[in-house]
Length: 33
Image (cartoon, rainbow, N blue to C red; front, side, top):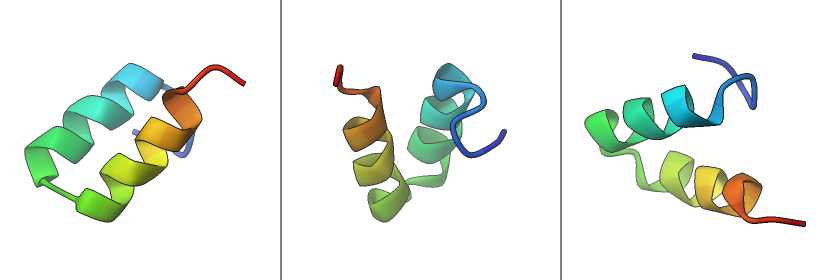
């Protein structure tokens, strides 16, 4: 796990933890810029 190091791992952790704020963060950073 890590801030932006591995998006997929972050997604798995967020979904498993059920962290809404973290999920929103992941969505924002997962979206193509």
